[in-house]
Every structure is written in C-alpha cells, then in structure tokens.
Length: 365
Ligand SMILES: [Zn+2]
Ligand SMILES: [Zn+2]
Image (cartoon, rainbow, N blue to C red; front, side, top):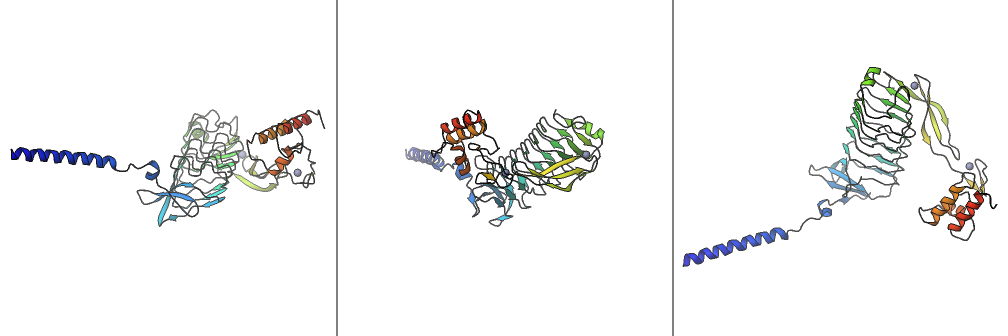
C-alpha cells in the first residue's frame, strides 16, 4: 500500500515535471524575425550585424550623404561583406541620393542587388579580392560611367550591369570565364569592350540592347569561335569591329574633349590604335538652359509660354507634363510649376494642359 502510494506520487511528480517542461518550452519567447536579425546602426547611418565569424556585415543605409565611406572596422571588427536588408533587399537598393560608395579592402563579398536602382551612383570601387560580380548588383545604375574590375573576378552575374546606360568603355579582366544572362542588357552607350581569352561562356541576352560595336579580344579568332555563346546579340564580325589578339589598352583617350552645351552631352574622344575608330566616352550631362528674363544666357533660346520641357517648342509632351504635375505623379520643380501654370491661376491642372495642347495645335497663340 505504501509502495503503491509512493509509486503514484512518483508518477504524478514525473507527469508534473513533464507538463512543466512542456509549458516552459512553449513559454520561451519566440524570437521575431526582427529580433533574430537585430541590426545596429552607426552614427553615419550604416546598418550592420555581427556575423558568427565575428565580422561585420553591412545590411543597409539610413543616412542621407551623397558619398558613403564604409569603414574597414566597426566596433573593432572587420567589415567583410555588404549583404542585404532584413527583408532581403539590396543594402543600398533604390537609394537615389548616393553618388559614390567607397568600400574598404576588407570587403570580400557584395550581395546581389546591393546597388540596384541607385540612379545617381557614378562611382564604386570594387575590392581586389572579389571573385564574382553578383546578380543585379548595378542593375539600373544609369549614371555609372566607369567600372574597374578587380583582377580576380571570374564571373559577371545575371543583370549585373543591366540598363547601365552611361557605361561606354569596359575592360573585362583576364580570368573572367562566364558572362551571365542580361549582364550587359540595355547598355545603350557601351561602345567598346575588352574581352579576355579566358571567357568560355556567354548566356542569353547578355548583350541584348547593348550598343557595343567594337571589341578588343585577348584570344585568337579560333578561341573566339570556341566561346560557348547563347546570346544572339553577342557581337559578331558582321555587327562589330573585332580585333583578335588585341591588348586591353588598344583604345586610348585622345586630347579631344567636347564640352556639353544646353541640350547635348559632352564627351571625351577615344581612339582605337588598331583601326582608328573614334569612341565617345565619359559623357558629361547636358547643362540645361539658363533662362534669365525669358532668354537662355548660353544659347539664346527664347522661352515660350507652355514650353515646360524647355526644348524650344510647345508640344504635346509639355501638355503631358502639365497633366502629370496636376495628377501629382512626380514632384515638379518651381520652374516646371511656373511653366506649366499657363493660365496663371496659381495651380497646375487639366485646364493648363488643355491650353498647352491648343497652343501646340496652333489653335491659339
Ligand atoms: Zn579598332
Ligand atoms: Zn540654352
């Protein structure tokens, strides 16, 4: 009887312990995603996390500077990667303020989409130890005009330079073996490219909508023909001047620099030492008109009432801008507001667009 009681107490105690254990386990606070990925922020607005290897991973940027300098050490630990935001976006993705980012040599990896859509970015130095240009890393960086690849790069990832419309002249370094899908898709001003003999494969659409029509190639014509090419837009001897066994620096800058004016870009003239072809590179954006009392001080253009885009004529595109301003589709400048408010009633609305259209159609003066 006593034994039985003892057994029952033991069993009850065991059961109680088990219930308690279960309750305890479930009452452990479940970490939310935000807690799991708790990020710290530097005084400069760099969001970062310490990795299990005791290195620092940059996760994002909340600062407002145009030029961002990433330090070599944060909290006494080396900064080794530019990774992604907590919701997996690029660390600087969509930042339209930054113009330059300086990376320390301690960074060895830059995640995909890090600079995607940074439409004012003109300059980034890539660390010398990088082996892969990540997917989409500069996708849509329309002002990026020059990129120097580290020597150890082996692959150029998918969409890495897609729609980088300011790239004009690129040297792909020795050692690169693969150029992935859409890597240079939409590089509308890319005129000259050096490709190394080590290149063995080119993926579909890598050069779709690219302007490239002059190629310096490090290998022979046989090497060229042996490249596994899946891109129907890849330059051929019919679509481009291809120099085989060429040096990477065969295209050189000349002393000729054409300055920008009100409406056209300036550029530096480069020349190919193998065929004399002129290549315009390093574009400087057009200056825009400088109106004073209704007349441009540089080119003398007289401003017409309703010429919102300042192209010297009143046309449907001006009416469209007025409509977009009326619909608050973008934030107009004060000049645009003044130009679009043709009836001078203090606001831009559909009636202004109508007047502009009537002017364009010469129905009114
Ligand atoms: Zn040439
Ligand atoms: Zn002008």
